[in-house]
Length: 258
Image (cartoon, rainbow, N blue to C red; front, side, top):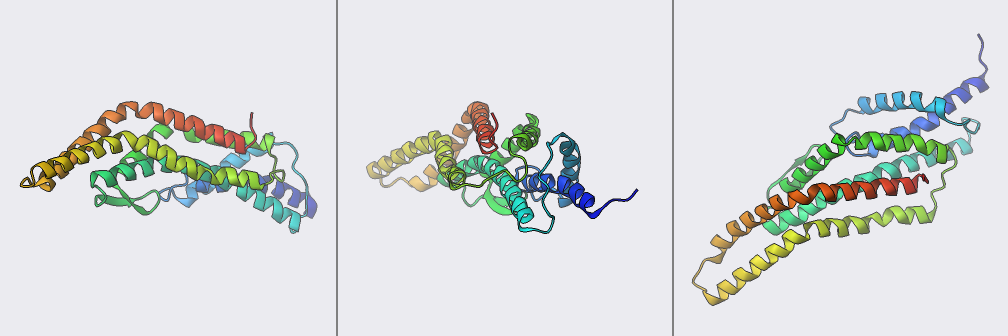
């Protein structure tokens, strides 16, 4: 059997463009895109998913492999995969930022540890929330749902058809607004209660200056804050469900899925 250069280039292109979108998303998305996951694992997953997805795709546009059009197609696939993975990464960081707010108010800002998933220093409370969210996300097969949405995106947005318009860019940038507002809303009960406790100690220090409020107030504030976080965990599952629903609906809007 003999194959022409055109046939070989067409075959490679049919698999290369989908693999770029899938590989970039796996590199950026939570859980699979963490630093503790070997790049070889992501490369193997990209290869396997591409082999499964490509036979179900409509015929892709044929363009010269070494051309400006082909480069533009690759850039579009990179932007789309990165947008999906980054968008979902923001939703995970909402819980991390909420933990940061509560830890700073509790005086636990010094209790930090290395985050092996991202390679940065975070508070212990933030790491607890991140671990909890990761376990819940994997337990409900959220990573599989995200991969399924990626596969469906090849029907709504075939390779070469995605336009990264300023409106879509602003939609992704506006996630930062949601990030700070949602994390503050999640931490607001604890922050409000601790504010009232600190105000009470302030009144006590003015009424009885001879009391050493710092030696009593810090451990009392810490114990009350941990108790409030423990009580708030009973409402953690509904918050997680609402957040994931919003995350998946946002990704569907980016991928133009119904």
